Length: 91
Image (cartoon, rainbow, N blue to C red):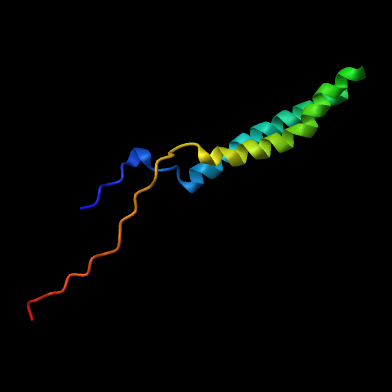
């Protein structure tokens, strides 16, 4: 009999993975909105710091959200082999 797959080594479900990435992306875009608002309020050359954050953050957010899928269960998922065909000799 094949070794059973442990529930703790299974990767996250696609729904959980998608939800986690969406939360990470939403948080990053919320920070971007804050950076844009700060750009409107801060005078002088200090405005460049939140402007750089507002420009670079979308790229970083997408990279982090997509890389987030590799976290979680990194163990290989066991899959059953071919089904053995047993002939019936009762005929």
